[in-house]
Amino acid sequence: MAGAWARIEEWLEQHAPRSYRMLPPPAPEAGIREVEQELDLTVPPGLKAFYRLHNGTGHPGDFGWTPEPETGLPSQGQETAWLLPRKHGIPPVQHLPYWDEGPHTIGRPDDPMVRYLAFAATDRSGLYGLFTDCTPGPGYGRIGTFEEAGIPKLGVWPSFADYLIEVADALYENRGVEYADGHQDTKVPGLVDQALVWDGPAHPRDPEWTRFA
Image 1 (cartoon, helix red, strand yellow):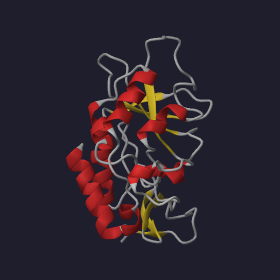
Image 2 (cartoon, one colour; image 1 turned 135 degrees about the vertical axis):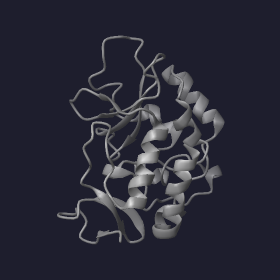
Image 3 (cartoon, helix red, strand yellow; image 1 turned 60 degrees about the vertical axis):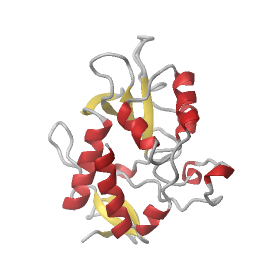
Image 4 (cartoon, helix red, strand yellow; image 1 turned 45 degrees about the vertical axis):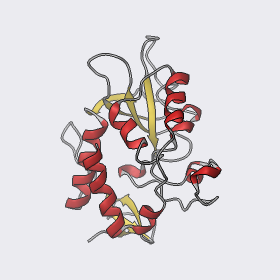
């Protein structure tokens, strides 16, 4: 995981300095433990290792939360947290239990032993995003996708580390990410005011978006 994220962070530093500057400090170990205790699960190693580097992909304000004073972050964010493909962003670990929605509430199987953890979403609502399977067993650590009123889709990537490896490869190859089923995303790396944003070249959402070249 660390090697893949280091490649992503190096790309941000060189090409998207505004995204790079807004990366937060590491998550407090106590915060990780509290989430595990509250949700009765064990965060998979790859995702936990990421949180030990950065407490999310951007400013807590991008997700609607005020940063803790000890983080040293400014009071307001710059909407740079949504730097992963499909405009996914990873929030501060201590706020994971408080997302309004996610696979723990959408289409969750009846089995009370199932443990899904939504860890990334496309906006503050948390209605669409990524989750990891924290259920003990052979599927532990798999990455899946979820959406409003839909059944969570497991096995999109074998692990968080595999996901980051593909993100890093897509960044350096200037292409959309490839999924486990073989299809390739049409959203590619681009920039909006020195911040990384993945979008479709044909019809970008932001008129100021330019494809990275």
